[in-house]
Image (cartoon, rainbow, N blue to C red; front, side, top):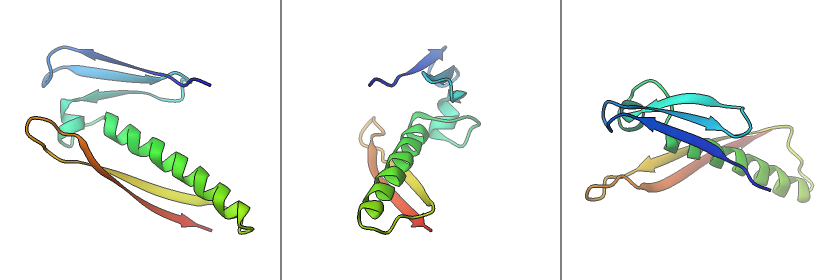
Amino acid sequence: MDRSAVAKWTGELKTGTGKITLGSGAYDGQYSFTSRFENGTGTNPEELIAAAHAGCFSMALNASLGRAGKQPTSIMTTATVHMAKVLMDLPIASAAFLARSE
């Protein structure tokens, strides 16, 4: 099974714009330097990574609780991705999860 997404960047780094489209068509949105490194409008790759982590974690926790005989009605997970400046790069330094089940 393959999943895909397309990202297109136009222009220079700080003044350009980008567009991210999921292969399924479920999301199509803009991103920019300010949405990634400041508080600008739009999404950013790290936010999409956090969304993917939250979705996977919720499903995995549901499966684990179900196998243990404690099937939840719902699970809500917040995933936070933290970027830390290392020299000239901003790699993802950590990811934290907060999950609540009912």
